[in-house]
Amino acid sequence: MARRSEEFLDTAKYQAGKGFYDLAVFSLEQALQLFLKSRILSLGMSYPRTHSVRRLLETFSEIASGEKKSVLKEILEKYLFELGALDDAYITSRYVPREYRKEEVEKLEKVVREIIKNVG
Image (cartoon, rainbow, N blue to C red; front, side, top):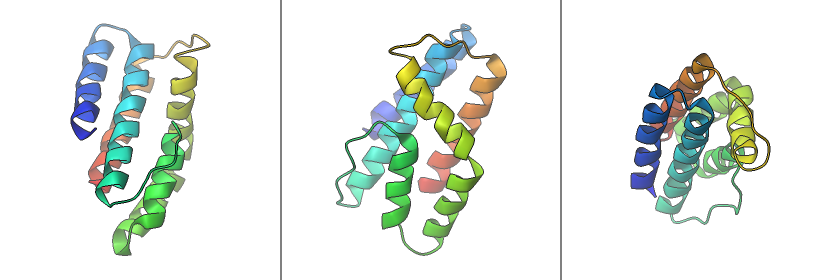
């Protein structure tokens, strides 16, 4: 799953460069979702059967320990809106077309990369 996560990050960069912003946001969501699932599995835990990156990050923060736990709680609070936007991207990519701007993709990519770095 971690390898697929990296591939989705690369794909998002490519899609954004082509102006396919809705697909880029979906790829960012997939990258984060797969990364979080892989990290939860690496701790010997089962992840919840959800596509919600917010819920997956909450799950990871619950099983994390020490300083990482507090960092993850801060990230959850700091990026509440962005995590919701990524959750929405999963749904809208399948059912309701939504247009994104380049700036939105850039902001969400920054958030995804920061979360991946902090979950590491």
